[in-house]
Amino acid sequence: MDGGMNRSEVEDIVGEWGLRAIDIKVPEAGTMNEMYLVTTATNRVVLRGHRRRDRRRVELEHEVMAHARGMGLPVPATIPTPGENLVVERDGRYFSLIGHARGRQVPRDRLGEADAEAMGRTLGALHRALRSFRPADAPQARHDRDVPAVLRRIDVLLDRLDAFEHPEPEDHWARERLATRAAWLKEHVDLPSPSDAETHVVHGDYQDSNLFFDQGEVSGIIDWDKAELRAPGEEVIRAMHLSLRLDVGLCRAFLAAYRSTVDLPSRQLGQAVATYSHDRACDLWLYETVYQDGDHRPRRFIKPGRFTPFIDHWAEVASLINA
Image (cartoon, one colour):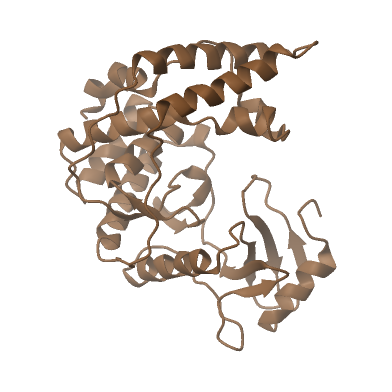
């Protein structure tokens, strides 16, 4: 196996649930949490090795899943151990066992308007259901408000890139992207106005890689690790950007289906666009992962061309989407 644990370690942890693993596979798609698809004598389950070392955050993930599932959303159940524990701790790490989602995943380049409509309808139902989930310790979405600090981090990255004796094409691309991003941020230090929409817990990572489809509907919503308090419109915009790539037909179907379930005024959608665009401009995860942490797995996401803020891309399609 290519995961973080060997087969015997996975078998040992699955044994905490009184189960014997017959087959173990690691999902092809990368994930921030360790995931193992486990076949037992009776069914298929997913062993999840949580990246978070805070047990309460792991427990909160299970609570929001249980709430959404109890409200009729297609969320796989978390499986308790014979001792009724949802979380097993090993050497300071936490593990959970979750039922396998029904249906199949659809790669984003194969999503059609029917899929987008199902995604929008389900996200609307999910947001409506999560309005009543109000734990006192739900995490607040983080918005990077310190633009000067972001600019200093970009300078550090540029210095690292300038020191390369034999830069690859991606390194040249990264340098141009970062330099033009810094120039844009210097001209747009003012922060977007906060949304007047009510914030509540959202999924946090609602996109194609975390969805399963069956018979024209979303049949499974997985990976609740990023559940947090946020204006729901921001999750709508994020899904249209990441999964639907601002394709006019797909986004129109998605947004219309969402609005058939939940009211989302154009004003609040515009506020969400401004906040999301600012957050994206300040997000240096890709470059810091590659050039500071030395993890080159995301290197393939570095693209050529100058930095363009998301809000400019949105302006090109907003009227066509009927936003």
